[in-house]
Image 1 (cartoon, rainbow, N blue to C red):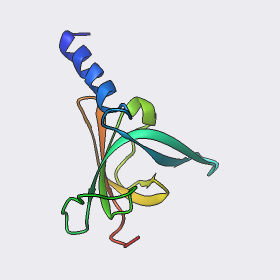
Image 2: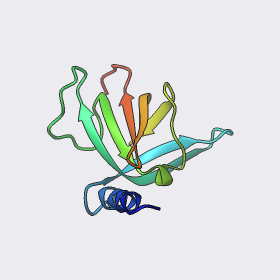
Image 3: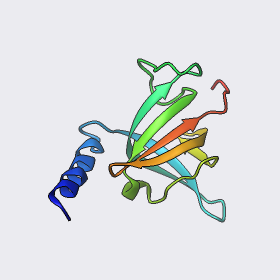
Length: 115
């Protein structure tokens, strides 16, 4: 691996460390037999209101739109657009997914409903 790629990999570890920038949140997944698994994973979340303005402070994730940054190795799968995504026991719809410098960026929408 090149020095640049090594540096990026180390940066991912720093950003996704729950003692640095990330916070621990619950990601719920379902297998093919509909068995539910709740995992507490380090993620970074940007929260938005329905009109697209950032929320200055929110306990947990009880807002309408969110952008989640997570290490793809920790999540162990890549969500697809229009898939359900459960974050802190709230159902979101995936509207966009990209891998930016080794971190998955997942844009979520809560279908415009108010929690």
